[in-house]
Image (cartoon, helix red, strand yellow):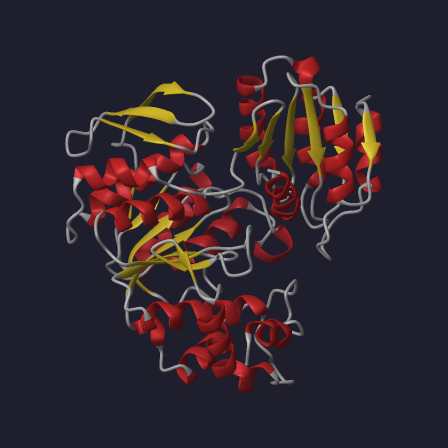
Amino acid sequence: MNYIEARRALEGLPSTEVKPGLDRIVRLLEHLGHPEREFPAIHVAGTNGKGSVVAMLSSVLTHAGYRIGRFTSPDLIDFRDRISVDGEWISKKEFSQQVDQILPFLTDTQDPPTLFEVLTAIAFSHFAKRKVDLAVVEVGLGGRYDATNVVQSMLTILTTVGMDHTALLGDTIEKIAWEKAGIAKESVPFIIGDLSPQAEGVAQKECERVGTELVNVTDITLKRSSYGLDFAAYEVGVSSLPKSVKIPLVATYQQENLRLVLKAITELRRGLEIADEAIVSGLASTEWPGRFEVMSREPLIILDGAHNPHAMRALATEVKTFFPQSDKRQLLFGVLADKEYGAMARTLFSLFSRVTLTSSHSPRALPADRLAGIAADMSVDYGLTGSVTEGLATAQARLRPDDALLITGSLTVVREARALLVKKQ
């Protein structure tokens, strides 16, 4: 089986349908000899920020000399980019071999695995084959019943809890927190970010239920000393950590993610050797595309994968900071239909002089004309486009060298726009 054949074999699997439960992933992993038992893992859940935390931690641990597997979702650059070891994507050959092994399960008409479950199994098998020292694993959706919740955790992290995927995770913060806190494991430290009192209460009860410690980040103090389009620098007020660090993730909201990463490092240092030099160089070398990523300077074009109201509110702060002249701001915006797109639009649209509405190729994408009524009600100057290709071309045609264009609303929109922008470079 070659790579094209492997991709075709996966095409019929449910990719937008979520099927809670761990039975299918356990059967897949049993067939592969339980590779998830071959390495310890850092397991990261959360509404926002989990991918950035995974990226920073993976980079630091790689710079510390460990062989690190990384599993993230969704893919942004290439179908294989969510599965990597020390930053190297799984090869097409290895991916094809893994699919070939799993092939008998793909034709199960009674309860076929989802695409995410298959990719999870492939990732864990690849990590075992490459003999990683540990893996940093991002939850796909929720946590408790997510396919990744079979790893042998040495550390678990919950970044944030917000109202997202409410049809699947529940319609209250408490219900969503219960799903996400389900990654907690007995005697494994459970680090939480800046949670609401309701969410933190749920996390505390879950930790008590499974028998583990809830770890807060309140002792990690950071002060942003400088920032620009390339790096944000921070002074660290913890004697056991480097006095200062810088990260190429420049948005203000990354400060809370950095606090989680530094707290995770202090916990990991109880059993792992992680030098200060590795922390500094690893953080500075972090690569995480599509998160306030600068694609052009003149005109300024930035991609950001914000895709829920909480993330949009944080992004709005960055717009005012990095694009101070409101009459020079333009927006290319597209969302998925199952998101709270009304709240997202109302948070962002009024900040821009021109909004171009678009829709990605995703089967979950919201038609752009569904956003038009919101823009009209807000008296926003807007235009409709039927694709990201058309939307980007339309928006760019209006840009002057001193203008700024923000592309956001969904990682599917960011993915398509990024490919077009990279191609032009």
